Length: 243
Image (cartoon, rainbow, N blue to C red):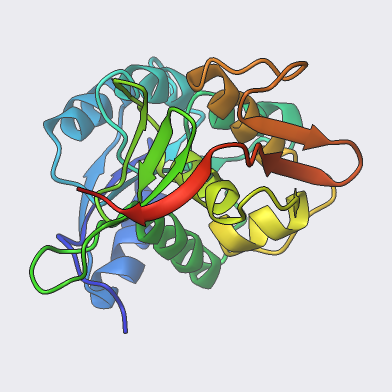
C-alpha cells in the first residue's frame, strides 16, 4: 500500500513546458505540484518547507541547479531529484556530492520519473507515531541509527544525512559486518538496476565518511573491500530498542 504524506512537490525548471507536463502527469497521481522557473525563486520556495520532494533542473540561467542544491542543503534534507541534460557521468556526480538523492536525464519517461520519485520519498518517510512498536536502534561504537525516527548520531553529534545517505548507512548497519556489494546496495536503497558506469554509491560512501569523520585508509566504520563492496566494522555492533 502506498504510504501517504503531505504529497506536495516542488518542480524548479526554466523549461515551462516540461515543468507543466510534469505537473499534468503527477497531479492525477495524488500530488500537489508547485512550479518555479528560476533558481532563486525555487530556492526561496524550497526553504519555506512543507514539500515531500524537490525536482530540480541542473541547467538554468542565473542561479543553476547545483547552486540551488548547495544552498538548500545548508538548511534542509528534503529529497532532491535532479533533472539533467548533461550526459557526462562527472556532471551527475557533482550533484550527488552536493547532496542530491538521485538524478534523471531529461529523456526520462513519465513512468521512470514516478518510480524514482517514489524511491527517494520512500527513503525519507518516517513511520508515524501511534501503535507502532518501539523504535529499533542500531549501534556500532559511538554510531547510533534509528530508522523510525530517521535520526543518526555520532556520539553527541546529530548527523545531517540525506535520505539516500541514511538508507546506505542503515543497510550497512543492518548487515552486521557482512560485505555489501555495490550492486546490492544500489538495489536496496535506490530501487533501480545497477549500471556498471554508475559511481553514485561510491560518491555517497565518500560523503558518509566525511560526515562520520572516517579515514578510508584506516576506517573506524566503513571498510572498502577491494573489488567487492563495502562493510561496516562489526566491533561493538548491537541492536535493540531505543530508549
